[in-house]
Image (cartoon, rainbow, N blue to C red; front, side, top):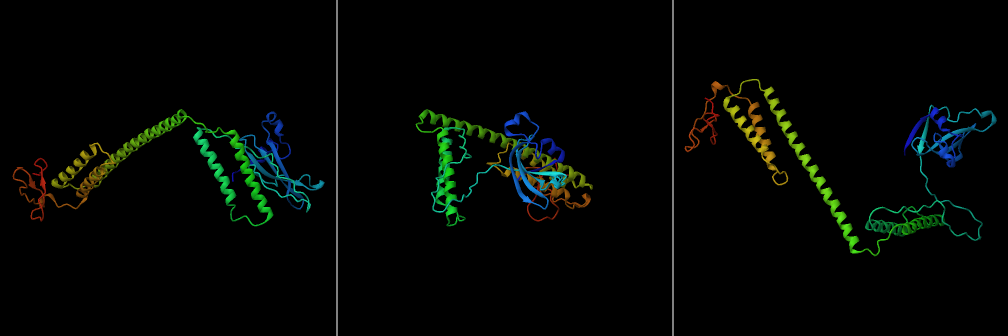
Length: 337
């Protein structure tokens, strides 16, 4: 429920509650509220009656309901209509058709039900004929379901049965009005069907191109975020490392980062090859672990020095002397002196 509050001065400027404009004279008084309905004696106090006023606000054109008070006797004429409130609360309302019961003489002839003047025809939908046909079909199916399943709240009494029949007749009347105002799709030619198919294809192609553009933009933003993350990580590691690293460890970490940069520089297709980004991230993580791990002093570090591959002269094992497991080769230009 939408509500709003106005000041007493604003209510007086609109003419609330007794100086409102008539709906017929609305254009002549654009600054006044338009009175739509007034319901008196909705509540009663000791010296005042409680009344409801429905009006259309001049600033936003919406319909609101406000409660005001009126003195019951001549001595209470000076009673405050807003009950001494600093702000006046308004509640937005809308018109709704309701079913009422009338009492007639028992045994007399019951007058036939007549359509009320408040029933409005459903506006004719806009769009192609196929869409209009689908709307009409759904409306008729809703009416059939309403008649077939009245709901668990309907009890076995004459009043509830009359209410259900009245609602069904109202819905069928709106369907009839819609049937007379909407354009029928009968007799469609192949040209009309082809035109409809072309419009659907064009709209689908445009939506596909828009989706591809959004996907490309998101991939570019993701790549930029990855570069920013790696740059921030590199700067953070450089700031955290204060002691001198061993040349072999620094060279290995540098090789890891260079390999990660080469992987990121390759054209990537995340749909068919999602493992490239994971490989680059793993290499950077290994470089970070090497740079932050506890390292022995450079003068106490002894290399294995074994030749890894006789065919590649100058490639020697850079692991500590006496290590277990396979050798770790290092390039001659990265090997420490």
